[in-house]
Length: 616
Image (cartoon, rainbow, N blue to C red; front, top):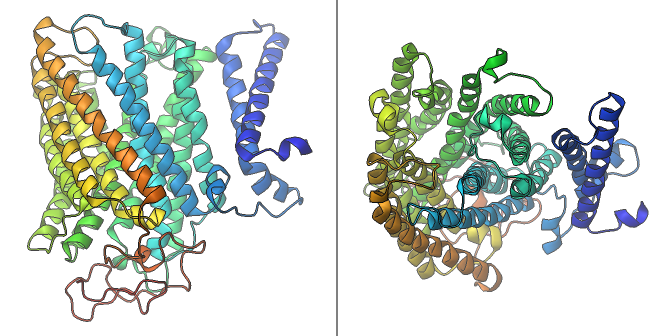
């Protein structure tokens, strides 16, 4: 045992995980044998093995040293590490965890992009090229769920972890060890997803609708376990952010002085904590139908597959706002600082965030207009879906109002924030057609839906993510990037993105169905065009990755506040020290008081950067 515990944390976690997996499989096989059942049945044995393997992984990566040994009176936690090694350990520093999330999610973003390239290669002609239907749907499903995971976790797990304690003047989150746990749950999710092709893949797509998800290949079980595990991480993260923002604000940091990004994280965390539990129950029911012989979704035995769709979308539509609300917060944060103006309609934006949070739970069934749902529900869900455009439109107008007559600093992050606003308009306008019953019936399951969804998630949120990466890159890394290369990246991705996805609306209107590698021959030309431009779009991410990797290693050192912004994260060094601030900050005013004579956010400077007073 002592020799094993001396291994590096990652290697030790791998060893513990494998041992736990094998032990769980053996235990499951033994119990099945005792009960007179067939001993080696893949899915029940793999299910129990995974549970034990996940526990072993977590114990090996640091839970044993940080928690269990302390419970047993053997030690007092694990001392923090410094340097590059800290990013490969069970660290409780919120900044380290934020970087761990960010790097992991960027890698998964690039992997998901490669899967999209494979899909577009297959769709270059109407007949099969190299992926049969099952492999195509597995590839598409992996692309979908990886990108959904990135969209959910890259801001909430990455930027929120790094920035929220800094922005509210805290030294860490409320539950540091739970925070570390929520990250280290994620790597097994990636392993499960990448292993799905080894067990036959899954052709249900990322939604995993039964009865198909109950009867298809065993790769589906790995997908369900991955989704369920990621949901646990999301629940823990939401709980942590709510507790942190409520209890750890610095003196003077009243609710009316919170940065808008913190408000957006708070609203999204409420959804994350509450809604995720519903999809978790739905996934558990599908798993039980597969491995325990239940019939929650088998209509022949009293089940109802439509029940799953209700449960799934009761989470999954609010989950869109787990992605979009923090993206709004990022865009408004960047816009107000780089326009040198107070945030327009601050209180209305906050109210809009919470209006979206409430209404997002009341619109899920517009995804079921063509699924056999009772027709008398169509009108109320159509109306509620239309209503959610009011608070989201308010946030959009707040962005425009902040820009109006501002002194815009058109740096790379500002360009991406403006790109977010542009793409969100397209997403919102095209969403109207899918919210209205008559047009949704005609357009459902076509590439019109694919284009709209990508404008919402990639066109809006991923543009906000890229803006956030460029805006807070100096604070996180202590290095500056090349702004000219950043601007080249922006224009490359903006043009390529729109030229890729706008033709998909046309293709969907003309009968291009999603989730199918074979399509009418008359759509060959438009699909060839989309694929070629999609490859150009993929090249923009190669530039992004190479540019920022070089900047992180060799870029010029960043000053504490290169954007001359007012919020607290810019009041400390780049990157921040372990305890965030040299002394506890005291907040005395608005974080966005640009142009207001005598306006101060802090009583006095607490770090290496003097506080801008009136907005230069």
